[in-house]
Image (tube, rainbow, N blue to C red; front, side, top):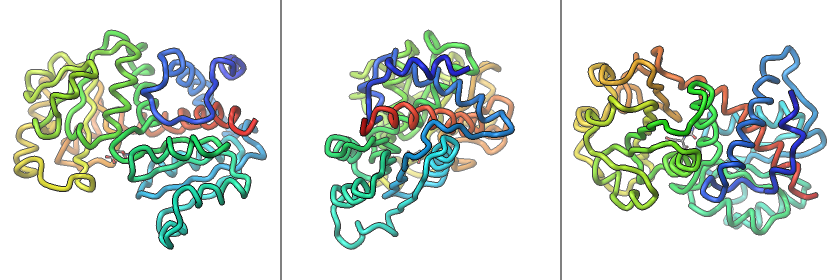
Length: 316
Ligand code: NCD
């Protein structure tokens, strides 16, 4: 079972900062490791000693439930010691800089720092300055690499492989770190990607990444193998980007009527949190084509793999 885990030499990074800088081989290597860790989750004893004696700090300077819980559980299952720091409990609120706070964590012998931050580039900033491993758990509208890895893992698990699939990402692409990381990963693994949404939230500039763009969801859905729906990131939008939610649902929401356009084997994905009745109809979110809960389960295995691989390189 641990065959993938022994070939550590295929991984050389102390940090996971984004998908953009990974090659296809590295992405596949993480997914293969996640396979091994997923099996651990089916055992009676769901814990392995891989990170025993290491300290993982979950440093979340932006609200999160599922990602923080997932990283915390992943670290516990690897037998690491875990502490959680949130924006409101950190000295950042007293004016301390991000770098000083992180240096304090490192002086306390933190081995791995999992960072969520509202500024794009925050994880890169720390990764370059600390000898501890830094895992990006979402930085502004930039990248969310473990979300993309768990999405890729889920697609690969359900479809067998990713190359040649048509993946449609719908919604607020402009402000979505999930979209960016997914685009990089999907293209590297050979999928075809179409972005769908209002022109204001899906700028033409994205075409330069190698994706197609459409404002007509009904034209795109029939050829989709995967539909990934994104939340409107109101917290990041300084102004209104479309006339109103009713209009958004009418034009881009995955309603029951619209879902009839999908192939029966098309997967429906959502990174959460879901706004039921907005980007997706509530019944569809719980329906047979939805793999939303598989994404959550797989997120744990993928984050175990990432903590294990980076934690083995950091502070050597
Ligand atoms: C995403 C995020 O925070 O970027 N959610 C998550 O990681 N669970 C997407 C979102 O907030 O809509």
